[in-house]
Length: 217
Image 1: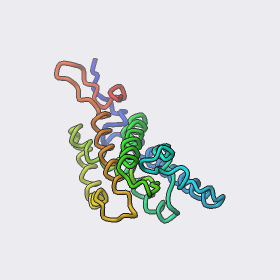
Image 2: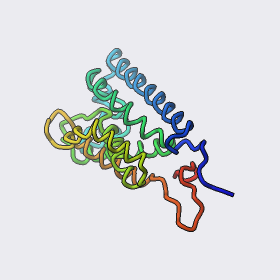
Image 3: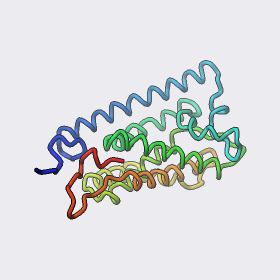
């Protein structure tokens, strides 16, 4: 009995299931952005001051909880607008490879990016925004084509590199108003996630489960 992936495999490029998975991922990411806008609208409308109370305050214990909350907060709508399109686009490609892998990868990125900011950032700053997650997704997509040796992932690697490769300058301390630490550690978190949650290649003598959901961690 053949154990090769069938035409219904949602992770095999060119199948109807693959395009359906990509479409669902796009819809899901489009739903995330209005949620972020709702948080920002409530924060500003009710003057909660969530940026100051739930953002990352580096090297302070009372700012450590911001590691988990800061990706959902932004310094105004302009900040959120600038993050929306790359979050949708990069997140779609990451999510299309599997929801469970997406969630675990996002958690790793949030932890690595947030803790990196907390340990190395200025204690006089408050850091919020989804930029660390965006750079993490960029790190995943740039790394996945290498570690999984898939021509589809290589194609995504090239597309993302052309569209957002220039943003890598954001990992350098070029603007004191921008948390380059969040960008740098977010990118590193994405690289780590791509390696930890890569799809395992079948062994020479073993059955071929490539493309199967059984291969996901």
